[in-house]
Image (cartoon, rainbow, N blue to C red; front, side, top):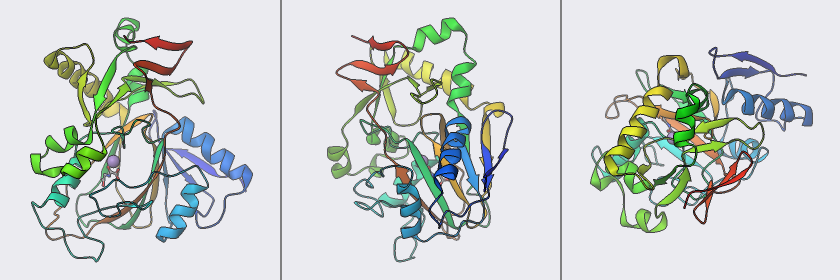
Length: 300
Ligand code: OGA
Ligand code: MN
């Protein structure tokens, strides 16, 4: 049976239906699904109740998974528990490090750009949604890149930004990151513009993990990031997902940034479970941007 694909916005995103993620995808459905993912960047699937094991099995059928970073609930496993609850269901201490760490999800970001090979895709399963708030919003950094003038594209095409987990967490609170996390995840370089090797489409690589741009003064770098983020997050390039229980949403971290919206973490209980498809390769190797059109840029 062919899968159904219905656009969510004129620019990106689609609802896909006609299959059950608890069952292995047929080769034909898997190919259709991956083609929709590459084309649409955000795929929404309703009515997909999953256990952790089923979510891992579905995700691994699409590619190898990242291991969850240290110092968060689910560390060392293939599951991230995006929640105001601990694994035993009790609430995280308000203002404590785990709660503060999670607050950084409210800033626009692309998952795992603090890793040398940043995440390809994230797959998020709504196990228990908030009664009020807690939407997740996406912005197309591909549409943003495409909208730039040739001059603006030339200005940014060879730039390299420095990303780290400590940078995004410090934007929330200096206590949000632990020494163990900083040691395990030192800053990494990432191309500011990346090209998708499957379809050749380029996108901006933005988000809260960025602390600097190589060769630019801090205020100039911040100005440029703010300018590009404003372009990417204009309404025409965004989609805001209002969760239903058992939704499964998969997004392309190479083509969108995302952020959570607040909810009352002291009274509500929200649990989304994430698996993350690992990236294929670093975007920068030995100071050179890889995977750009026509080979490599020397960024000195
Ligand atoms: C994530 C994330 C935002 C949210 O799971 O990677 O950023 O709304 N989630 O929970
Ligand atoms: Mn995220």
